Amino acid sequence: MTIRVRRVAAACALGAALTACGAPSAPHATRPAPTAPTAAPSRPPTLAPGPAGLTPVFKNGPRADGKTVALTFDADMTADEGPRAAAGEHFDNPQLIATLRRLKVPATVFMTGRWADEYPAEARAIGRDPQFEIANHSYSHYAFTGDCYGLPTVAPDRMKADVERAYTAFKKAGVPNAMPYFRFPGGCYDRKALKTLSAVGVTAVQWDVVSGDAFATDSDAVAQQVLEGVKPGSVVVMHCTRSAAPATERAVRVIVPELRKKGYRFVKVSELIGAADRHH
Image: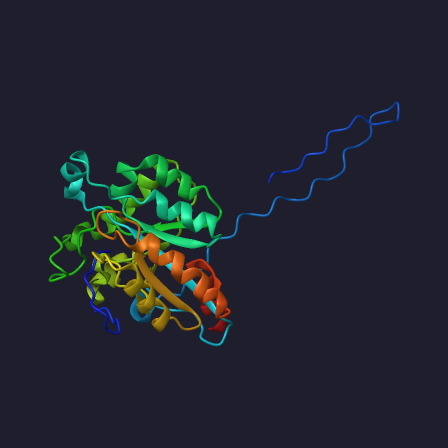
């Protein structure tokens, strides 16, 4: 999701199963103790479908449920940008991921399938790190509506397949558990797109704070815009692409300690959605 934003209020429109092995001390074998049933893995929280079965849209968590904030990072790569990557353009940002790890900031990465195809080792490392969660940002990063920041568009009869193709790309890269969350490229959607994606069973995730990091070079301005916009339960949209968002990593180094000073706790989108679902 790459959008150009000036400093304005933004409104647009991711056991060790401990087995004890010991020989019995008695001379005769004893009956093994019954094994407790293994709990089925819990499904990540999602929102209930909207009216007429439309895909639900999530923008922020509860305001009165503690000072939590979710930093989200769009790992953008459009389907037709392969030649640019081959020529040396970097659509990844390993330094940003390293900084988030060092600062111990949980985060949700909205990844395109094309990005996972280009950087499978990075996608796998992020997806297997419990500090992060990977969510769907389409395969192609083509828009799901017309007139969306100049992006090419996906035909309505290809929207569902495009989202499912991204999940296939994640699995191919070795991402074990991509989340059932979807962010529209450009943040652009309409009723028809929400209806079309209802069969996929995802929650669409937007945001209430735009960082302004897309194409920005002034990290202090990006940090200030985030710090001024965050409220309890906020979802902040940022980017994980070196070429399109070169100031993001530096901005994060300012944002994180400042928000912690204000008492904020960083969470993944899944925690905010779970809180919103409980409030309903």
